[in-house]
Image 1 (cartoon, protein in one colour):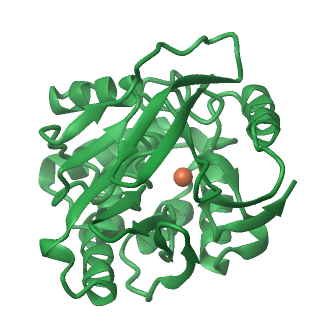
Image 2 (tube, rainbow, N blue to C red):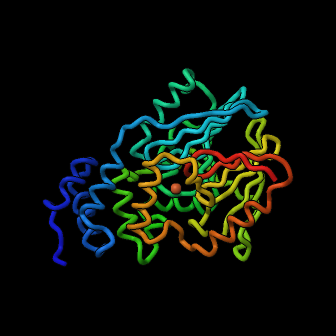
Length: 304
Ligand SMILES: [Fe+2]
């Protein structure tokens, strides 16, 4: 296969607003990907990054207030726990969808800008860490925190360091506008270091207002530094991408996941570990009803 030229990738460059140097970097990485990323796939990915279709939104009552779920055209579901004195968000979609998410949040909560707000990131992937401003604290595992610090220093992120997948992740970062990071409000939450021999390790409890999350770190099946948060009093668990819900997911989400899998082979760093983590995730639920919040798709009502 002969190498592509800047002209060949110009559709994606202009659609996503890449600078001259970013366009060169995109081209360099497209030429490194081999057959996994055709121009057709590249342009389809770029199309996804600029869609402005309205997100799917729903909510339910919980003892602490209300749980909202916002599912964009592509990218993670954003959860908002609305309590009397603050909003706690879990994950925040793609950077290129940040403006849309912000206007959605302002339409749900007319006083959004004045509210006290925390954000929890289940992991460092760009489709979960799009909106990173306006929060008092942005909570995450030590591993994710160190990854963001490294990125702020110009180092490749955890995904881009994977030997075989670097070009595809670099293409995704460029097209999704995952190009700058402000670490000022970011906080590492580990009280304990994870035991990498276990699928899930308890790493501490995160208390925010009336909410108390028991936090477990995975062994890195999806990506290193991923966390799962159990909120026992409200019977809610946030699973990040250890769990996705294809049964209640927008059609575009499914298409996007299938496209990502075609480009990368798998979305997981280690699928066997991811499977063991999912089993352990369910084993940690005690008897009764739970709201399981997946990284993609809407929540699942689950009875033990
Ligand atoms: Fe994701």
